[in-house]
Image 1 (cartoon, rainbow, N blue to C red):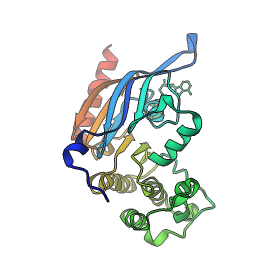
Image 2 (image 1 turned 60 degrees about the vertical axis):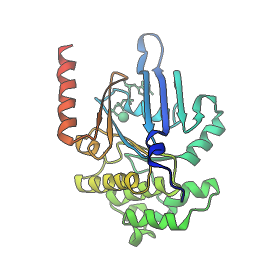
Image 3 (image 1 turned 180 degrees about the horizontal axis):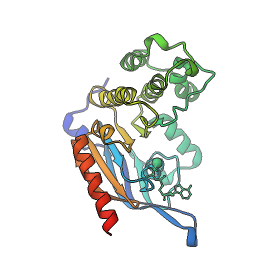
Image 4 (image 1 turned 180 degrees about the vertical axis):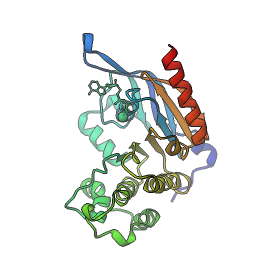
Length: 256
Ligand SMILES: Nc1ncnc2c1ncn2[C@@H]1O[C@H](COP(=O)(O)OP(=O)(O)OP(=O)(O)O)[C@@H](O)[C@H]1O
Ligand SMILES: [Mg+2]
């Protein structure tokens, strides 16, 4: 394992959006989902993206993660400009450098937990680092469940499989779109704890879209979106602080 000096880690950018715009549709039905968004996601940092429904959170995540095309501006993952990539290269980049966790766990029902965890690497023809894999499996507490299929697991356990799957290949960055949206608060807290630990202890970079101020409080930083623009940022957030900030936006929204 290589160690990066703290100072270098603190400034290195895992992903960056510059003047990123995304417009859906044309003419009267046109929707500007992202309006020149500029944001950095630094290495080894846990960022939460918050904002009202329809503010562009998922669109931002999908564009930065190479899951969707954008209308203007640029996106960088590490040193790679996504705009310069052909479809095949983009698929490869997603596979090799990015981990995903979705609200619906997106596990394959015919595969065991372990097979689901290693599937992306199997597809890529890469051998998992066994020591790392064991560490990840232990961290999410799945050692006794590796032979189970998704239907034999609880929702919380299924999402732990998805977390382990995202971490298994040590991607440069993990994106989660409401990863705790389908979980009860206890399972949600567990999953958030694993994400938090993966950042603190394993140096992972995580970007998570969430509606929940408590979930956001696990992050190092919260970025607030409204109407496709970044309107605020909070470092070392607390749940109460995030909740207060969201109420302010609501109040402004009603008076403007
Ligand atoms: N495929 C699409 N076609 C047209 N408009 C879209 C499409 N996807 C999203 N939009 C619009 O873009 C805007 C941003 O949507 P987005 O899904 O990013 O919001 P969000 O912040 O993730 O909301 P939520 O919290 O409800 O998930 C919304 O106005 C939405 O209606
Ligand atoms: Mg969304």
